[in-house]
Length: 127
Image 1: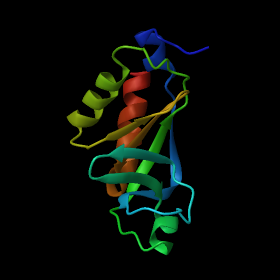
Image 2: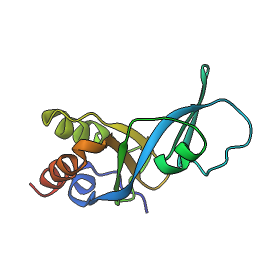
Image 3: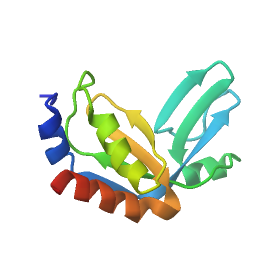
């Protein structure tokens, strides 16, 4: 069952850092030769979030982003979770792009700051 209680969400978020680098790019159309992690249909084009290696094979360039998933099953209607972990990362000077799935939140942080971000989230959750 999805969790809405902010205190339980923060204590139980258990961030997990994925090993592979991800990227963000605009797909010009047609069949994608890779499976995207996420897509966002915008007026200017289709934003894709995918493994950077797969994107590069398809000719798409991107900065490197690390994916950190919060393992707690957060309710889409929960209030305050995004604000709380965003504030914890902002205090460390770490930018964050969030993709909310039905079950979990996925945070994309600059590749070079991935370990700092993970440590900040763990301190926040357990501190």
